[in-house]
Image (cartoon, rainbow, N blue to C red; front, side, top):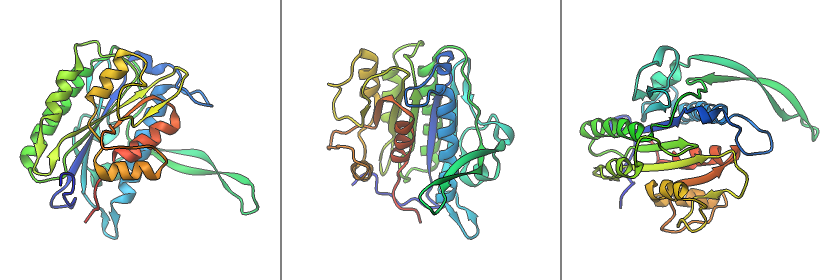
Length: 278
């Protein structure tokens, strides 16, 4: 069975996040509280990096079960890390955990023990900043990810396959991304093909389509193209999605359309569910 390789320090896997940073990411995202798409996506990635670090932390520190790349594409294509990690691609998770660019204090409401809520502050590490500038060179970004995947697999041929997550709000303006996506998905480790998931971050109204098994509910050609670019969810991710209330089948793909803030968080959580760590 594919996607069952044990993830360990001696056999790590990797995540590659492709972040649309084009000018339209300054537009508001759907949801009860309007926010810029770029802000929502940056917060979601920064939160995920914190959660991954916590998940992989042991008594001696954060273990390098994963290496992580955050690649932005807009006015340019390349590492979206800030601070000490600026310019780097796949970084061991322990180095990520130790090197946020900065830490913000943010307000957070917590239960007061008497049925109400009280506001407190919490530390929020940031590794990337929101950015919205330029066009949408998605094909270049996918090719960039392909080069990272190729090198990773050559060095880790038996690992749980790399996972590439593309977060975008618009159509590629540098060609047909299907061919670039196919190049990524054609690569494989001994445990299965590389996984490519896509999240459409939309400011439009309408019903979200989350983890579909066909493109029948998708309203336009671009959404259907992103669906076609998305890998089927492995069985353990489908099981987790089902636990969260999503309908799934063997044909379910790692794709979300017209995502609001909640969908972004759920997508990243489900999309990064790997097998047990050792």
